[in-house]
Length: 316
Image (cartoon, rainbow, N blue to C red):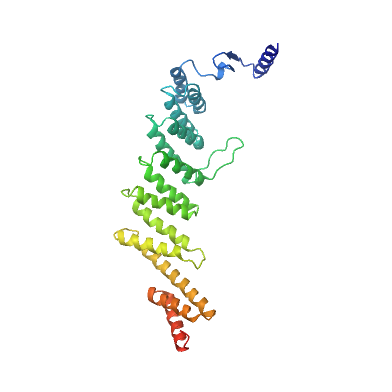
């Protein structure tokens, strides 16, 4: 009796929804509305979805492709349907959903003939977000920053197809996205991976320069610990030595000059600190470092002047 009551109640609810027809299927043990059910065979459902796709009704096409995958995820044409769902979302300019569709294809059907195509489309969606494309907001969802989405996509491409056609480019772009966000430590690691994982890539040279640049930006943080400056100097000197013909060498030399000026200034401040504390031997040591290691810097003349003053006063 209770089952009959529940069934009648459910029938009443279903009938209230625009007089939709719901059918109980013993196989799935649930109520199904034929209006929203997949066709009898995957091929029939695919043809049905493609009809909408070819007519330009991409919203309906995407729903029908997704319906096929959900109903028969192990069918031979499920990967193709998943791929076309992503293409449909792209045609609707719903790039976040398109990426999610390709991501599912890549992870669920890694041996699909559409794997490479999905990776390629992921990469170019990442490029769109890298360039500032905004995601369409659907429902009460938090809108992510474009660069955050680009980072997610590039990481997925590198993780799923590191040595495919877009592996090196995605890894490099990942570094550029981090650099745009001023996340220089992460950017440096991303660029370093380009140099180690893809040494033959045309991007490797620029990546080496970018590692040096990121180290340079990290060195600008105010601190007596100048290890970041030393690392940046090392990277620029290495770049100049290993790529003497590069068009980036003049910029590298200018950055190296600025770093050495910065390093000399830092040592001069340390020496001055010790002199004010009347620790004249320590002060003289650092003044001498400035004079010996950075003789062409603007700080060198001041260091020599202070050394002479300490010597003349007998405080060296």
